[in-house]
View: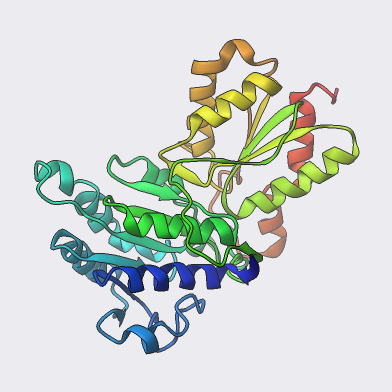
Length: 327
């Protein structure tokens, strides 16, 4: 094991898979000459050449369409978007072509493709560059949606995604590329669709994913000092959703709080709350709580950013409400 940055985990996963399979290639804005907007493809152009590490024009719809066509014809593209906010322009290719092609062709064409890039808030980027898209794409049959939190999970899940025969979307974060974590030296994969229990607990289940897991961990540490035992689950994959791990945890703790960095309406937390009440209603000793970003476009002013995003104190308070510790 060695400690590496999140961006290094991305680069290692892509490089290892490109060495293993000559059909794999990378394309996107600034991925080649500039070593990636976030330096997640550093050194790859030098190793693999310009035919397999391809700088594209600033035209997300165009190069996403090229990648879908390449995947239909036997290649395995990795498409990097500089941000998922820009990928709204490519949504037609992702939703109407990559996701539907296997079904529409009667199984004749699979689309083994990975779309990846940073998602959600990253500081003062204002409303149009600060959105979370997990629930939007998880709504679409035919797509798999992944939200890694650690370098270990990023590398293992990206390698699994590249080998998958279906289109896979990976939601990263600009604020996580410099994060460090322990990653094995040798070959390993992390399975898609399996959640990870980060902390075992007995009093309440806390479910989260992506960058805001940092807030969840901080809240757990605060509550531990107050004698509250929280079981923390990192979803890692949004679609397919590992509801079984959540259900088993709720059966033990009898309480559920869901934390996500997204708008509340039609959210992942709403889907989880529905499934838990359907499959584990009799085990709940309190209503399911969910904590989200405020239901407003994201602001530029730091004070409004702080007001919009849930912090550790918000999570602590909602967990205490679930446990009836507050009047």
